[in-house]
Length: 300
Image (cartoon, rainbow, N blue to C red; front, side, top):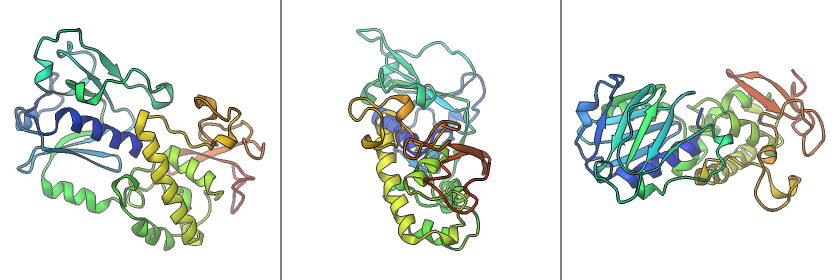
């Protein structure tokens, strides 16, 4: 599932391509029946909060998109391509209906770890986007959008402070590894950032929230801002520090981008101990039982 860095990246790109312009929208396979409500309207702005995108067309018309586990965008310049696959929605600007002087190009966004950050289209040149496989793609009223925001916790990429997150964690007996996956605690933090932020804090994911020091929570929040902003540049999430990588300089290789995420059974780059994994909050959790020693840290 895309995490907050990628959602905010989409918001920035789609804002550059479509905000302030009259856009065309359709659901060519009948999978988005409300396209007529926003087709031909001016898009005012693109909003991002946590893992949610909101395309604000004004007058109680906000297109809500939640990519979920399978959702993905394809974007391109030049004319609209032929409809292919299970296409939920298309959005395009006038550049997509004009015959370009040079052939258009498209970019399908693969799972982030297989995307090396190359081949991206300059956002101002994007003429169309296609959406496939989202968890939700529907029209929200302003009231419904505001209700969504009320349910979500603070977002590190929206300039929010950590106070609301700290207050919720401090009164909970749930494990911090579970709390960080709760979008009402920290919006946009997902499975990758959960594992990596806890490792960088040398904090056991099994520590009850109420036992985590406020200073530790503030440090985690500060690091989340830095790492998630960096992940907006090219979709790659790199959480290791140069001094902890086999290659101290140059491009970060895929196998050295993370400390613990998806490294189960491999030695920790700091302690050499085998990285462990178990399911927590419905997703695979990864941690080092030595670097993150604490309550139940050796549980498998």
